[in-house]
Length: 137
Image (cartoon, rainbow, N blue to C red; front, side):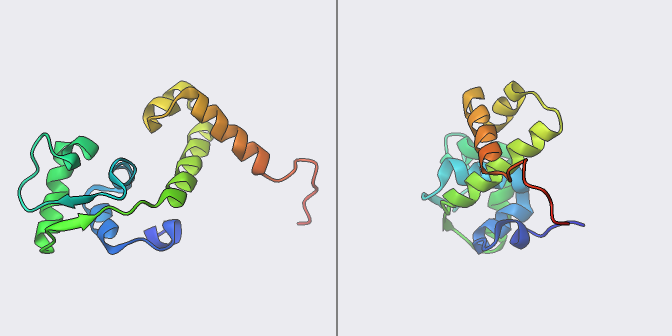
């Protein structure tokens, strides 16, 4: 069963729904991570030196521009979403590690250090249920 963005993230600002539909989840999360709290202008086609292109790449920036221009959006404030991003990052790290991906490869994919990945895995282990606890079901 596929989860909707609303189920996955809870409240998600409308602008992020447009971006999510245009370029997908990974690019949306990269944009929020790189530009959270910043107002971006998309009145003209994105240039190579623009903040949007630097954050998500030229192809994704053009797709975002086309989508938002179709909605007559000229400027938008990128939401910060710090707690949601942190939860999503931890979920993705655990999923990748569960799939047997090496820590160094996870770090490269997530744009983090190996130490950061180990810390995230340690926090997940520390906050998880006590393995000595018996299940009631």
